[in-house]
Image 1 (spheres, rainbow, N blue to C red):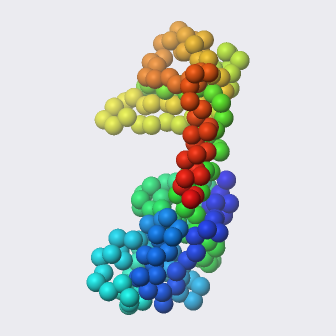
Image 2 (cartoon, helix red, strand yellow):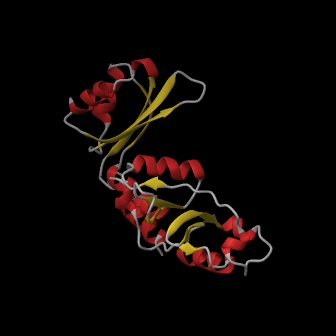
Image 3 (cartoon, rainbow, N blue to C red):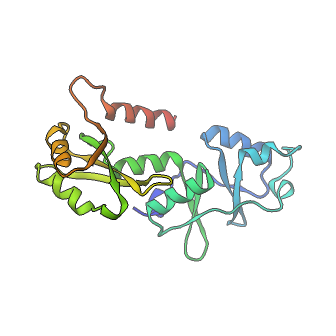
Length: 220
């Protein structure tokens, strides 16, 4: 999935002639803390709620209030992971998408991003989660996958987290099985450190229902 696939029609851009008052009103209406600003159809910067609140006169137009605005964006062909990284780097709720000629195509937002990540990460699929602690030099996703598949299971998604000031990493894997006992025993036989495991049982709350409820709330 690339950035152009994440564009939402729910986030309209402001223009340089809009007022700070209008910007705050739209941010409240669309439940975001940032909005793109265009001038003659060109992307000039990303406006934040705090930027406007710091000004003394919200009735002034944006081109009067701001000489310069930060200009974070992604290219239309950037991968989803680049979109996630850019939004995390700038701590923003809306991210503009531009084509190779720097033409503004639209924006994606944190709500759209969470939905996309949940789909590719297997969050809504039934299964269990295992967190391993592994030496960086000994990390092999191929071996981890082989252990899982030897128990007639599949890895739905995985990600690696580098532990601070350590030669160890955390490897989190989502597996398409809710009963992880056999898989965990196999990892232990291979001397893997199991930091945590999470598996759904019949008595558990339905994670998918909770996630769907969260997404409905965020889009409200």
